[in-house]
Image (tube, rainbow, N blue to C red; front, side):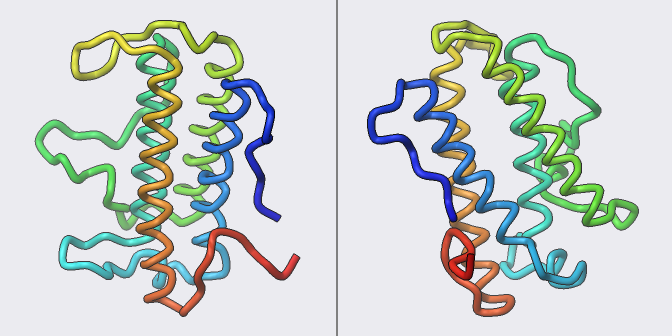
Length: 167
């Protein structure tokens, strides 16, 4: 069953549950597919399911950890290749990418738990931003890509929706 935002939850809890709901969709969208299916580019730009997971892991680390001065593992960004974080290298396994996303989520959750919504960090584009802003941004980013993944998954095997309805 998909998580639900609490109807009367506080702001921080509501934002995090909404983010977690979409994060869970991202993971669900790749379950039950082969490595070949996950890597198959289904758009002219080369977008594929596993690449979107890798991208989301990188931006989770960047927005929550780098913005607020926390350490990260090496991130897949490359100034010379703006799409590097969307591509899965041949030496990266599906398990590697999913573990990277899991570690990024956990690291982000630690930062969210430690800081108030008013906490200020410094974004990669040079401006200061609040934790509230980052949570809203990552909710938008994750929901957007979960929607892309829904379309890619439907093109792959016909599965649709935002959660497993069989449970």
